[in-house]
Length: 192
Image 1 (tube, rainbow, N blue to C red):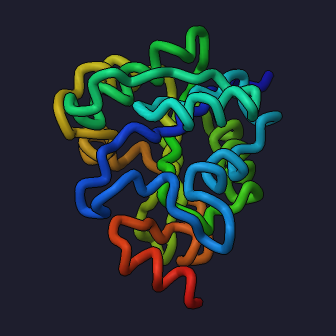
Image 2 (image 1 turned 90 degrees about the vertical axis):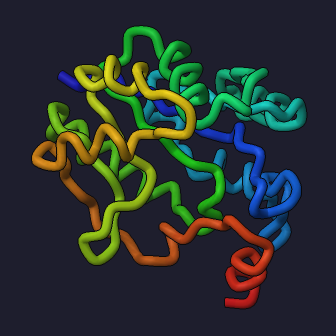
């Protein structure tokens, strides 16, 4: 029997290194947040929650028929975004955490990761390239208490490092895992 998998799209950060709301920045005519939401295959998830501080992202999440979750305290760090996301996924057997700054991530890869996890639902599953873990990552419900106990800017990496033996990886092309933290990184992707 298939497990119920939820998805948390993390779109609440302040993007200090980028210098402005990078989710509105465009790659080939589409914003980073739109690209992130388009990478989510809705049929793979019981619930998709988009956690953000930005009103325009809340509106876009609703346009995609996803659950819009307002983060009024982004200054509390990624741990608060994780908490809000998990709290909105009531009854899920696992949760995928998807970041919003990987503009080349493909829906097919997200679907394949969900399917890999469904085949081994006791494991943590993540996309990778060359054996190096990237995002998104899927956590079974047994790790939710550890995720909820995170503080400040400690994210899922903290939990994965404690449980490396439980991690399974799905190889994808390197460009899908490329994230955009700076304007220069965005320009590099635009010019590929």
